[in-house]
Image (cartoon, rainbow, N blue to C red; front, side):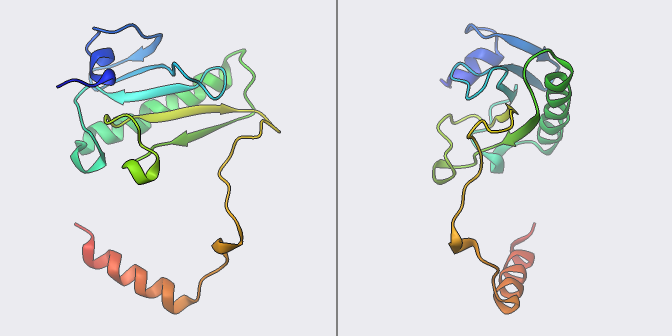
Length: 139
């Protein structure tokens, strides 16, 4: 299998590694949106969340929390931290290997999740119908 992250987690491609454990590798993003932007990737290849081992997913988040704490404890300029994980092309996934972005934030940095008026409160009946659909699909 050929994926850039697979090469990094296998140690066959250069990366600025910050942390490793038996399930994950954490390294600096080659194209950071801020200094200290980290990626946490599972060692086992999973193209998307549907393929991700639940224990790898749990470790991904645990390591992400450690990465956030390290960013805050460092001398890098950090006022807050965002986690971002894209699952699927429509969600912005461009690397077909699950990975969690841990992004240091500064007040006024211009980054962020943006939305318009289309995200106004929805009628309860619409929300209840969607909740019922999701309960039915939950596995």
